[in-house]
Length: 515
Image 1 (cartoon, helix red, strand yellow):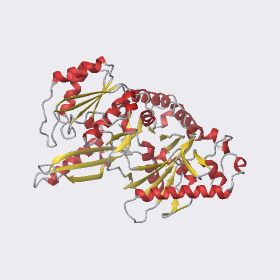
Image 2 (cartoon, rainbow, N blue to C red):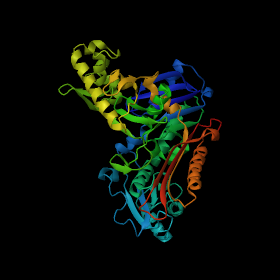
Image 3 (cartoon, rainbow, N blue to C red):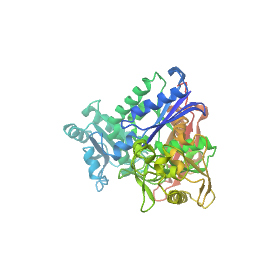
Image 4 (cartoon, rainbow, N blue to C red):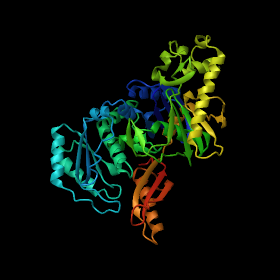
């Protein structure tokens, strides 16, 4: 057996699984410290379906800890951004597009140094060790504890980043957390650099959170390995999370979409995940969330790490309902839903109250919403359906019919028939699809690089890239025989010499429990 947990802004969902079968499921309010909510969820699972700690083979968790810390600009480490690229790139220094509040929150220091490569591996300039030592000494003098190192075209050749990291570590000591851009983002200097700085700023918090999650699980007598879900629907172990916390940012919507695929049996569909705070709309392609092809803005910062293509609306079970306009959200009572909604004895009119008044669900005390006109409640439900249908229509890439699957506890807000798209499918266990998605997550590896495709060697070069992705998935813990390529892109770059081609390969396999 294994346990899947997903921590949302309003609810913490958990499932006890045996293979792909759900043995028990629970939904509990997310606690302010998050960790105690996870403990409560595991205890509730055990109460519903007793088990021993030794019965559990693995625990998979999706958490909002890290994205919340960045958005709220709190608990971030003093961070330096070191770029290798002089004499190029001087016009746009590191963090040039960051919000001032966020720069201040990480006590940002920026440095430019010689180094970097052209797309084909030719050096821009040699690395200057003395220059790097001077920069590192300044970092130490200013209390920097985490460093993000980015080199021009490091996804092509990352040797300089590794060398620079060794030099900086000598000056700052082994306690310094160093993040390297070739391990974080894709081609595109500023966006990759931004993602690396975000990762560096979260490194100290990652250690604290992982230790907290581990303690919470161990306190339940569970000694099984703990995994956290990534943005692309695959898993990472505790040590990986400590090094790459930025990879968890979109795990919530991703888990819901993967759970929708598992519970509905559909591999190509639109998924609408309605929680307590937001409704997230995405597309499943071959059973995995479609990834965005452009940069992603996180807390006002442009990045280019792996993220699902998700459109979020401020509509959820805890969303405020504005009586004058009949609009819902974007403000929400969040995890305080069971204290502030009318049906639970509170004084705030929420979307959940509207669902009860409209007869769509029977929870709480329905007598507390008898005063709400049923016609008004139905008109609010219709408005929600219109906004969700518009969002799904914006996400699809063709006019071809596409099935719509609704998951999440807040999906009670959606009608049985959605304008434009017809019947809405609600699979079994739809309310905890996000936890199911976390529990069935696989292990992946991705390669994104620019290669020179020599005439007559195209197939061999592309096969090498595919094999790199497969090897990366196996190294991450996938069962070798289960690994397969699930996504492959090949884009010629005519503006660069030497038959340059950008190649991206993604491999995915089942988690090897024996390891």
